[in-house]
Image (cartoon, rainbow over all chains, first blue to last red; front, side, top):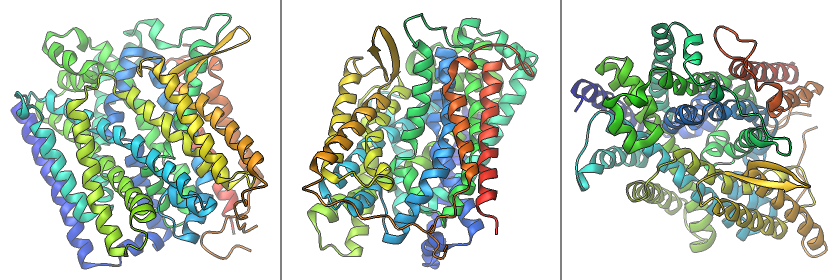
Length: 507
Length: 69
């Protein structure tokens, strides 16, 4: 067991636990604070939105899995960078419009938006359930990150003891989410970001210095891994794979319930637009993080006998912890691992709150108890946030996760299917609820079938058109089918279903 | 005219610039190479990182154009 690392880790973990509960006490004294969030000054809105959305994009999973993919697959793993390049134009162009609609009608989740637009509660249920199902493995992924760093500090046990540290961390998370709500992750996000920036800067300065510059890092990597393999004459090969993974992931990201929670909780459309220019600061750090995978290659951590056990247990996800242990003193490793673990707490909290909103609004109030009071609705949300976390914990303890990134890609495959209902409806009046529901079903079934042909191991499916093959991200192929069915069926049903109301435009 | 907080500002023609990051990033064959390197970074890496900065600058530019006065 690595005692100095563990001591620093536990100290920092206790600090953020304190902040989590302190946030609740502060809020209890000032009931208008949540209200302030919705209407606060423009600067405040931009600031909090930056941390909340940054926490969503930039999680423990990112810290572990993106470098792990670069470590294992090389250039392909860098798709996280073009993905984040494309996210922010979408944020700028689309989401202020969604915010305005939600603001005008008091919508909290994307299901609310859909219900308000089309008056079809089955479509709203489909959108809500998709959000929850896609988010569960995402929360579980955060736990993978936490599990890996706890293991890296040499904490181990047998049977129930094996998962005890994870369970303790999650009980703490559940407790402060329950009492403090969204305020807690927003405050902890500040600590998380300071720690992560510190670690990333330290690694990206120190490791190249040690090896003699970035040139040496890259020249230590086999040249074939540094770029994508050139495709064969009759295929778009890695090019279409790379482009569709990046584009599909960008479309999917902002549809996740936790992203929407952060977007909708900002104070104005202007705050969202400003963040489209400010959030890329995180992307730069993400790009540098991805390169940690190559640094791990350059330092030959994979063949170091000290790390053989870690790689055996966690696969390539162990690349970053191994790199940190190889380069830094124990106490700093403890700080870095705490940064990753806290980086898991923030999005987990936001995600479980977002899922809880869906459960209480769409399922509980929409189907089970239409006349529930506001108090009943919010206590239902609190209980749901606990259930969601227990679900994710059970998932991670009983389901082995060898390919963390692929799991997230499967969640992306489902969540992207709500795009026609949530986004296209803002622009196209011809769509209606039943057509969209059929499109959603078609996309979900087709995408899941495509994934099943790879035994749910890969997110890429090869389409062949006239002798040319286009390997690409399944989510995107399924989305095309979804849009086609939605539009076609909406047109056919048009005589029988009243169209969605015209969106009020301020122009 | 723009009155309520949820109102959309007037769309500026500069929004067309948002096409550029998509074209640049989806045209993978244009950047899938090692040279010219910059500060030891192969082209593939510094070019894509550079587009993070360009896309942010475009967002800032369009924002300024749309929220002026």
